[in-house]
Image (cartoon, rainbow, N blue to C red; front, top):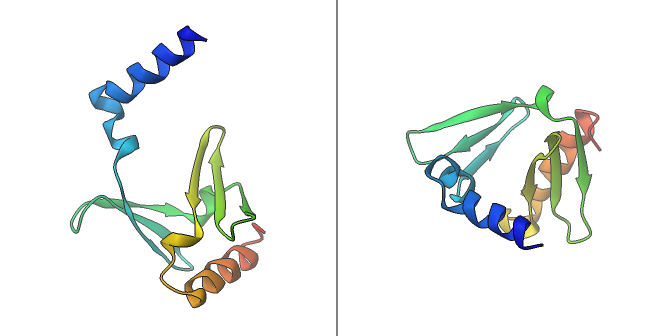
Amino acid sequence: MAFWYIQFYAATQMDQNAQMFDRFAYEIDSRQILVKVNAREGGPIKWETIQSAEKLEDNGFLLNIARGQFLHFPKKVFNSEHDMKLMDNILRRKGLL
C-alpha cells in the first residue's frame, strides 16, 4: 500500500504531470471538444477519438478516450439544463450513448 501511495504522490509532484492537475475550459459542439488551457492555448479532441460514453447518476457524463484516459463532466460544469441536453443529444447522435 505504501508503494502505491508513494507512486501517486510522486506523480503529483513531477513537472511533466502538472498539466493533469490544472483546470481547463471546454467548448463542446458537434465537431469536437475544444480543451482550452487559457484564452490562447488549447487543442481539439475529435469525437472519433471517444470510444464510449456514460451518463452518470448525478446527471454528469463520463467520456472514455482510451484505457485509463477519460473526461469527466459533472452536472455542475454545465451552465444550464439546455447545455446538458445538448451534450446528451450530441452523444446520442454520435452513437456513444
